[in-house]
Length: 344
Ligand code: ASP
Image (tube, rainbow, N blue to C red; front, side, top):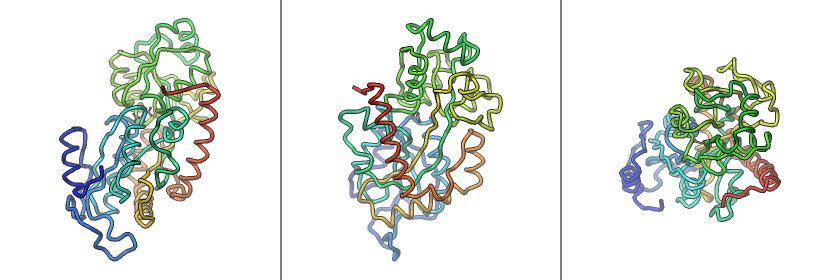
């Protein structure tokens, strides 16, 4: 991504990848390139398009949350924001690309809990979360749901446990690659039930859910930001939500504790990152724009509909985000080591 003409480079990527969409057009000077011209501490940032990299497929939960906040952030920053999906290897391909990008605030990564699990899972990750990124702020924490194809036999979570124990060699469990939230939740399910299932990796849970609805795969864990619509429309069978409390937008769905599997507890925190070395005034500007987006009523309403909420303003800061990442890296290193997991 290092280039003196970011616009030309972005245009090439649009042509090559074909999944980029322009989410907001604002008063900035759009695709123009050029140096810092303004008088504030951020050196006139931004004066060109900003790329938000999503390390999973378009249409999935990470993509959905990113597109929700991209527009109000673009409006606050006065620049265009382009969302680019760089999927693969449980989010590590996109994260690695941002780690190596120019530290100028024009390449921003949206990542989730996978940022804290990858170092323990991947031997040759190629980046270090705390050393190669600046944290911008936390975004949201999303509950997960256990969902199956509509005609899958088990009716309740308890039935599912009994069924997978009896049919472990036949049941297929979808995920978005090693280290993805769906993979972690699936591992917790397998550990809690003592079964080893056949896992089917996708490049994001967007395409995995499409296959679940189509009946090509049996079940999976995924975030409410991806599954709420299909659960409400009865396009999938939903067993439980993986948080201590029920989700307001899915009031009939029991928690895993209510449904008899209290060990299956996980929610998926998201944060924004820029490459290490990005000037602090630029990081601050992005963090301020993030706070504005998270206070936007449209964003609050959209998130509520999908079973989640923005973090409080004080968590949308580099300091709180760094502390969370440090704590989570330690937590998951232990869980992953105890379970003897490896990505390759
Ligand atoms: N968040 C991923 C996605 O957007 C899925 C996952 O982590 O399981 O597809």
